Every structure is written in structure tokens, then in C-alpha cells.
Image (cartoon, rainbow, N blue to C red; front, top):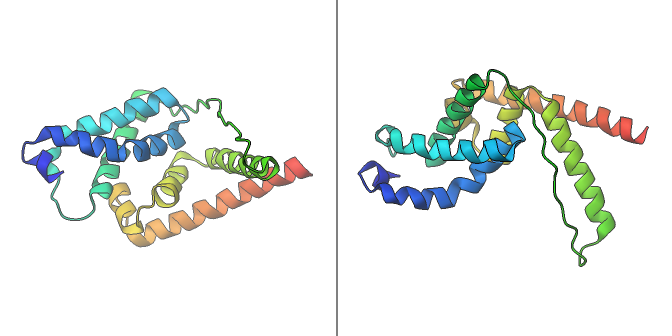
Length: 176
């Protein structure tokens, strides 16, 4: 990113290749929409180019990138006036060399966890995505969401508890 900042903007392509899948996963978990997620990834890189002079070189590049991603997502939700959940069909091909029963149970559990995650409000969902799926540290998330590290810990704890409750309710409904 320091090269991009110093004018070698073609180096942004390297960052794009390295981080596009992580950003896509982040946005897809928030929007549940393939096209929106692709557009939002593009918007992040456009913003990185536009605001390249703001990158200090200190601290984590990924935390800076997710700060931009968070802002892009906030702008997106404002422009669309309301948050839209547009689930797409999840495609999963079972490969013959796997144990189909185990894979089916794992897939079912992951889908149920994904559904439970989508029942959380968008703020709780985002904080879990940043911490558990994207692997950011609480301190980095605090900078992104403009709150203290301690506050992030509390929010993650509460969001995980709510997610667990929702998941268990769904599991009881499926098996009860």
C-alpha cells in the first residue's frame, strides 16, 4: 500500500488479488447478495485509491482496509435507504470421495448457523463477521467501529450469546 501511496497505483492490483476474496466474504455475509458484494469490493478498492494518502503505514493494513469496507457498507445501506437481505441459493456440490452423511450434517449445521447469524441485527452480525470470520483483533475492530477495545469485547460476547440462543432455538424447532 505504501507503493500505491507513493504513486505506483498499479500495485493496487496486487492488493486486489490478495484481499478480494476476504472482502467479498465480509460483504456477502452482510448483504447475502452476490452482485452487491462484488460491487462493494470494487468500491473499497476505489476508495483505497482515492484515500491512499491517508494510509499511514503504521498499524495493520487489513484493519485500515476493513475501516474503509465498513464505511463503504454504511454508505451503501444509506443509499439503499434500508438494509436488504436477499438470500441467494447456496450451491454445494458433494464430492464422491467424501463421507456424504458427515458432509450433509456439517452442511446443515453451517447453513443453520448462517441463518442464525442473519437473524442478528446488522451491527451484531458485522462485529461477529469482523472478529470470527475475518479474524481482526478487538483493538482493530474498535478503530473500525469507533469504540474501545473493551466495548468490542462486550459486544462480541453479547452477540455470540444471542447467536447461540438463536441457533439453539432453531435446532430445537428442527428436532423437536
